[in-house]
Length: 425
Image (cartoon, helix red, strand yellow):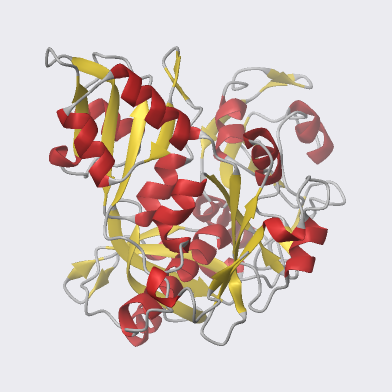
């Protein structure tokens, strides 16, 4: 979702191109500049990312042409409100000043006429809420699909898919409105979150509904080991860094040395695969001046280290767990072939035999695979294709180790190795 900023004090001779030049190193999507003028000499600018909007705020008070402009955080709702006020003052259709790619007429519903779907997140609803109730709540908007009772970050909520992005934008106006006795919190969402959630839900469904050994199963808990941490760090600081403030303190464990002093290593025990996946992707990030390492570990290995913390043993575990040589590829079309995957990643050095497909009981791919690459560096380069289009779908890519691959459920159960090809190289 775009971040909307309001500009005041715009020079009367300034146009959309002048505004784009003022923010020339920041991304403003097509149709993202709306010059309203008026007594406050206003303009509204849509920035593509929150980071770019933050950088834009630093330019408040700087001159644009011959006038000093001031910037304020705004919203699509405020822009629409300003337009309604202008319409009341005009007796004929009003066209807002802009460049060719920023022309915006107030008689249109929105600057972007794209028919792509839009998404929102809902919080504060009871677990019994149905799709029909949500459709009634968003009366006047076209709801296509609803996912109820799904974990979204640290909260449980609903995801709603609308027929058009404008519907999703209009849905934000329903924030804090009541549904029965509950006050509903409405937040923006995006296509990536929808894809990840539907992917996880489809994965959980066969796990819970089938007793077959040929169905992948995720462990109920996911454990990561974090090393090279400051020895003074607290559990609260660790949970905030890993964006899991609601994780119980007992699920964050410091590794102690023989003298019972805190070392630079800690363990996280997650019951959410999404939190686990987020944590392992933080490997290589900076915590202060330190570069942390995150890797998966089994409960047995963690217990052995907790009761016998030997530096040589810790080092050996680090070395065996840390190298992320594999690329977990998701959100591909069902039935995808190895040759298609090989062609897409043709710039990276690996063979067809290095591709592991995840297949259903019918022996066909369910749209997931693991690529085994020569080095962690090549895996990280390949991960840069995350979000790219592949056969009409946007790929979800995660760098993992061979051990992580097994821990997230891609290892074939030993009892069916001779009878099934559910996962194969």
